[in-house]
Image (cartoon, rainbow, N blue to C red; front, top):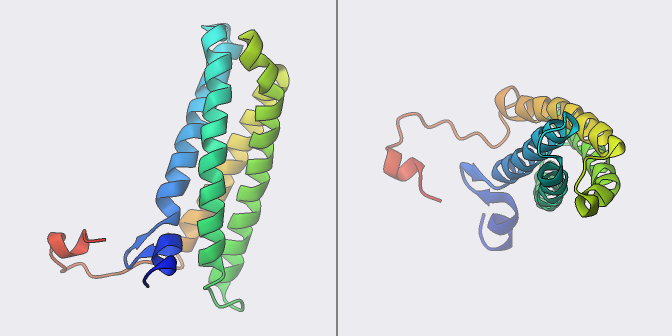
Length: 163
């Protein structure tokens, strides 16, 4: 791949989609931890604000992740089990993103008031559970179906790490 293809898909052995998912997962994990800590009554002012900001970072990373994931999905044979698993992964992750959007909407007042909202808490936890299922399916696409895996165990480190 070169040019636009590399920008969207990444290079051989170095797909772009997984690191973007890691950024989203990390931000959503921070949001979940902060919102739970705040709901338990600890540092609620800071956690209410921090959770909302982490949700925004997660949503931004999710948008980039969704675009690269869709681009990868469109390269898979539509009659294959890999395509079906990847499509389920995309649908579940989309549902999780909707839950995080709702969490951000309902936590917005908490950002301004320095508190954790009940709806923000519920939607973050539901989104996080959905994210776990979607991540499991995404792992299946890579580790069971072998999507974008380059198996060259004897390739020297210097060559394997090249973009």
